[in-house]
Image (cartoon, rainbow, N blue to C red; front, side, top):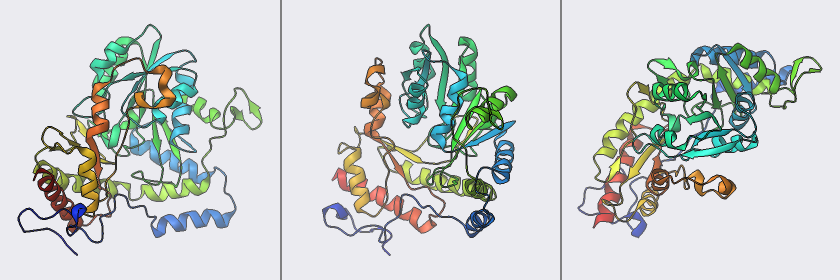
Length: 390
């Protein structure tokens, strides 16, 4: 296994040199423990596959873990957003959304019949810029949807103050931020509703699945009805709803994952601390920032490349890094304002988000990484930066 190059100006692997990491360091690693598998098999053997006792237990434990009074499980993270949006604003409303986030945060606003008003990103944290949000307000604005992006909580105090000032509902998209905290409290303790995803690459998974947390008793009841065709009791449908239930197989896997998610999160944070030092040592690269009062869950480890220092640019840098055997992700290649599906809603300039689409890349931060692999990542970063500069 090659670890680091000691010769001056080593030839980049992309130009025929020897890769730093062989075998390559994978960008993601998805695996289920034996306990997860046993939990799923037990449900399969029982024949009781539909939403049942395992989902109920998963909801109860997840609510407690995130600081919420209620947790409502559903089919996936996008369904969680749709369920949260449905009762909190109306068709025709304007909703402030980040221009820099995954598409579901905004697309489910459109699915609700509302209008997404795109807000630029803060250049330090990459979360929503509330100064720009102030400029984006319209007479029809009734809500703000804020993503805790990459595992980094937004400034919740500032969001809550902004929402209170303007009389807005607040929905937080925490699909990437399981076990992140704000001032020692779980993210479920804030806002009108918080949504989560359990997609396979997330910090915890059910295979597929989502959750909405809330402290509002009436909203929780509404969400439970909405996820099951508007039922308030068997075959009594008081509203039009959906079939967004979570299966008990997924609930059982989720329960098992909760047994170790704290350890997984701690390991991600340990890896991120090592990466911080390695990334900071390379001129032109900036490690992720953490807002004062926040703890980062590091679903992604997002690095910003300064093209004035590394003129080859982000895409050339990551191509060379991949050739050195380091997995790299780009989250995301476009700001939402550049997505064709939002063409009718893109009337605002979001220059920071557009720059992030050209300058951000993500390094491996999954808990399966070894210390040796982390060292390889650091060696590859230094080698590529030096090689592109020469």
